[in-house]
Length: 135
Image 1 (cartoon, helix red, strand yellow):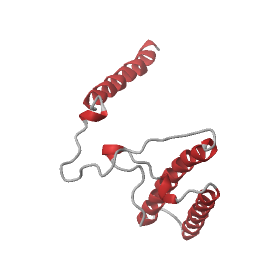
Image 2 (cartoon, helix red, strand yellow; image 1 turned 90 degrees about the horizontal axis):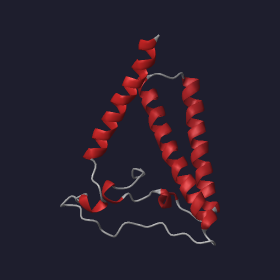
Image 3 (cartoon, rainbow, N blue to C red; image 1 turned 30 degrees about the vertical axis):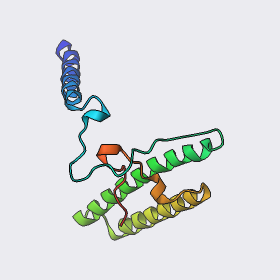
């Protein structure tokens, strides 16, 4: 039994060491990340500004951004499963209808809070945008 309790701890140590090595490879400050020479930043990074009057809209924008990211990931996974032939025709239909309904609801919520779907795409500076371009 003693060997069983030590093994997970050793595995956790290995994972912690791997994470430490990975973080050491990351730049320490945004200034240490060079911009690609052919794509200099067109504008300074967008900063999130909030006020008491806009806090509800700003919070909704953040929530909708996360939901949109998850929706796009689910859509890609669904397309991958369809390409593999992993789903029945009924499952494909149900999945397609669900994704279309979710997209419609997202559009309605954006309209309700005066947002466009493009507003949900956060600029991550040198990493680019959070969401891939639509289309």
